Amino acid sequence: MSFKDQLFNVMQQITRAIGAGWQQLLCGLANTRRRIFRKRLADYAVLVLDREIDERPPATPWWYSYLPGYKAPVTLESISHALQQVAGDPDTKGVVFLFKSPALSLAQAQSLAALFARFRVWDELYNRPQHRPAKQIVVHLEQINGAAYVVACAADKIMATPLTNWEVLGLYSAPTFLKTTLARLGIAMDVVKIAPWKTAADTFSCAEMSPEYAAQIRWLFDSWYNDIVDAIHKGRKLDRATIETLIDGAPWTAQQALSHGLIDEIGYEDEIPTRLGTPENPATLQLYSRVQNLLWRRPRRRHPQAIGVISLLGAIMPGDSRSFPIPLPLLGERTIGSNTAQQQVRAARQDDQLAAVVVHVDSRGGSALASDLIWRELSLLNATKPVVVYMGDVAASGGYYIAIPGRKIVAQRATLTGSIGVIISKPVTEGAYQKVEARRYAIGRGDHAGLYQDDHAWAGEEREKIEATVRHTYHEFKQRVAEGRALAYEGLDDICNGRVWTGAQALEHGLVDAVGDFQIAIDLACQLANLPIDGTVEVLDLPTPKRSTLAEPAAALQSWLGLDRAAQLGQLAEVALHGEWARLLGHEQIWLIAEHLPKIK
Image (cartoon, rainbow, N blue to C red; front, side, top):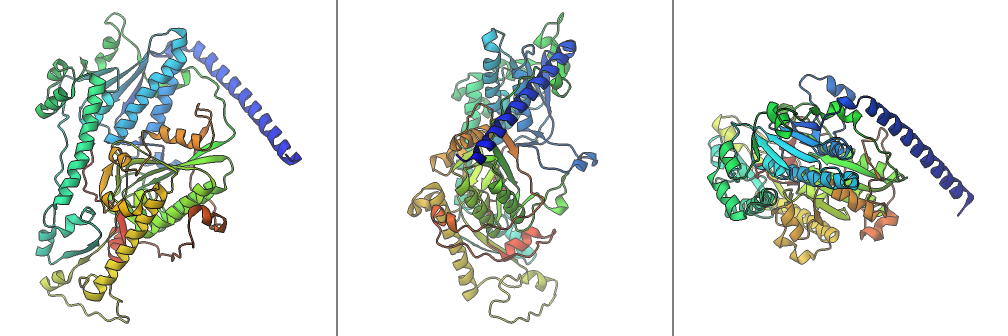
């Protein structure tokens, strides 16, 4: 070892020692303050779930908090931190969750249920050696639907108001098909796709549901329904036949749900203290935000290396990423811009502090070209440090494509994924112009100059060209899957061809490596990077860097990636804010999961 390396190691040790000493001092001061204000500490910390829930805090400018109507989303990361803090306090008795109609998906419910299980592990670690009573998780529900009840079943006690109905009704989907309706307006949707399971344009191009479409919904429902029944079975200790009978008989009143063993208590929010204590000595409850600074602090050791997190959320588009502080339906949805994602990934490659990177993907797809640009950067990153992909609610089509470079892929059981296929489509408005007696005169130069124009359907040589490019892109998609997942290319059509799977089904087909929550992905990243999984490794969100970075030469990585040449990809013009999807549908091949596929909330 050179003198320079020895000096660097010594400086690292000194820095860690100073950091540890500083932590000891800060924790000591905080705990002294806690002893002084001990009477302010409540028996139960209260967490309110009343809005949208995200996996991790979004990267937002400071001024968002001053916008009217803006509320920062509750995050699973913040809930995890709160539960760990409460579990580590010697005097608290538990946590109360007030469910006030949060926007909660089934995949998020499964992650939240996993946090409840992890809370018990933390409680065992911190308090069992001192023989303190086990802490409780209590859930108070104002409405009971499938996702909320999956979470509640992981709690120690379920309470509901007197007028709350148990409405775990099962699963239902009723997509609408508009081909005939559009035809009355003189509009048709011309679609070229690989397989009948690629249903992204079926709403506009079909007059009725195809057998393949119906079969796909059924197998998704089979998996989700099994997850819901299984959660109730484990949490409420009811046999599966009884649970299915109760679902078929729903809705049930709160009193009926109590008699069936589906809930433990009936009461209003103001009655919770006496139910958790006694009328003479009610339990004290306080919002977690008001007691978090009074909870017991423990110094945490920090490893010199960290795990980075890149969040890729939204529709995949060329250009820069875009998001809005409040819902703005006229301006479009949140997008993953290929330019922005490239810069984030390149910055992670150059950050020596990062031993591995977890990529959080929540996307139903989008531009095939933009997806491929992101895939390339993630492949290069994975050649230098381990990449683990964690899938949120949806990581399908283009969302799955950008997940392929991960050495390990983690999904929740309810995550929508797969949809490996390609589609290109455009509206044909010739009939609409005829109906209003409007005349268009097309003048062009080049045999295929009007290939993507909406005044005619593809036919003859034009259609052959479109079909050939779609087949080529689908081949490339499958080739990426075969190489990234170590699957035989010849057998991929049975799980590809646009089929959509749940995370549990994707695990069976080899499309993901594990089912679980975000912490599972962090643990896998630590293991791949030979780091401990004892909580000492810091997890860092990686924002978009302020300075752009050019692509680095990848010649040294060619053999590792199995590539003979780099992809030659042209620059795309900026996509206009309005008509974004319409432009892509008419000009580019897309990897997109159908927006109208069922989702459980």
